[in-house]
Amino acid sequence: MDQNLACRQALASAFQALSDEAVRAGWPEGDVALALAELAEERVIEMTAKVIMEGSMHPQIVAAGHRRS
Image 1 (tube, rainbow, N blue to C red):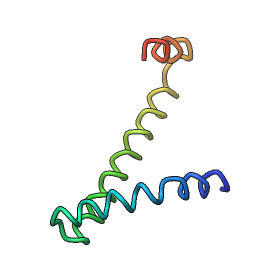
Image 2: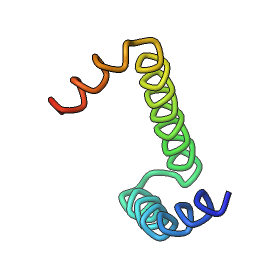
Image 3: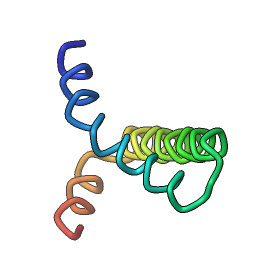
């Protein structure tokens, strides 16, 4: 849990800056918040799918894929 909190704290200022930049560009604050939440959700889905796929693959195949990346 402490690692998650530390990560959030490390990202908070960059996240706020991104949000502020979008609002300054003319996007309504609510739209910005929703778009950021949707992007975060998509990332979580991608990461979950990756974990599922790697978990269902033979460990040697997964290791070979990581070496190519």
